[in-house]
Image (cartoon, rainbow, N blue to C red; front, side, top):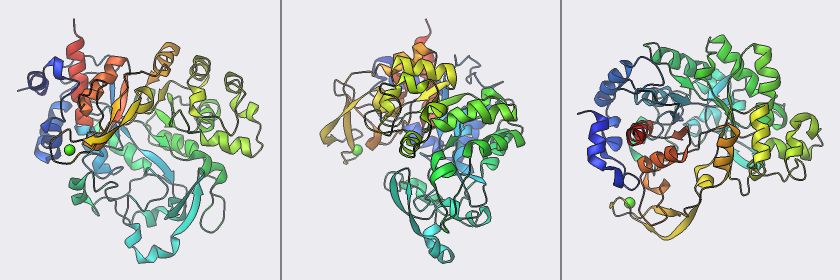
Length: 443
Ligand SMILES: [Ca+2]
């Protein structure tokens, strides 16, 4: 029975937004045999943009967040490979730099949470405290390790309490370089199903301007320059297969104005939004507090923000129609908002046991509001790719009427609101949601 047909009969349209996580997502895809079978079916597809029935995806994409991080330790080749085999259109590496200037895939430059570095006595002396984007962190930092040293480490599950099944892979996988991630995408996409890459520059202001190595020397690495250099060196320059994303604004402007033109490439750029209520783009904080020429750096964006850009500018200032129109005209092809800003949630007290396992872990309910930034962004012609969908109960929410919602229901809801894709830790759930949404949308 085809997955799509099976799902439709399992769920029924009315129940779509409220079902619990489908069993296939939890079990079937975690098994290699099933994954291989799925992979074979996906390989039969002619090209990206079509589903397994050969139907047009109408521009809707599924982004494997840190790979298939719901099923494997994040940012490993094994996690990315599983995402591709589950049908993700794009895999999402976060990029930081080593001491010798090589981009590697980690969510943070502080790597104690996702590697076994703490159990390497030879690196005990590298433990230190640094301030990254205004936050004090103690641990081990990629900029203090050569690539050769990084390669002696092994990845481990970041949230073992939530994903205990993933801990069986702890200690087995390397930290990949960005080049290795690109090579994987080329290799996995070679059978006629192009795989895209959606890299994120992590803490670009820290790496370029503010950060220092443990010996006190400035890091002084442009992540954007290294990223583009790597894509060009690997011949991975099809703009349909790359999105570059960042929470910082300045490095995206640099990519658009200087770095990409100099390299003779042009990739769509996506502005990520941290919490629009209080979070601030760190480049703006840094540049404003260091007396940099904000008009020169940000151009006309400075005038589109009430009061001008400053150290107190929040992501909320980038949600007006004026700001979004300027971003679209000058650098951004899309935005990546936090899903809980698009669909605001309130806390549930007490929490709810939505899946009946005896543990009450669902702790929020949607208010029913949809933030106007969504309609404004779509009106400006921007793509909207919210983050992050996660299938585990602790990340889920309820509908405004109090129905507990699965990640599948959440994904179908987001497509129905007009977003063109999303970051998801369980790409198989995202692919299923797209099939359901397209089926239900057909007249
Ligand atoms: Ca539960």
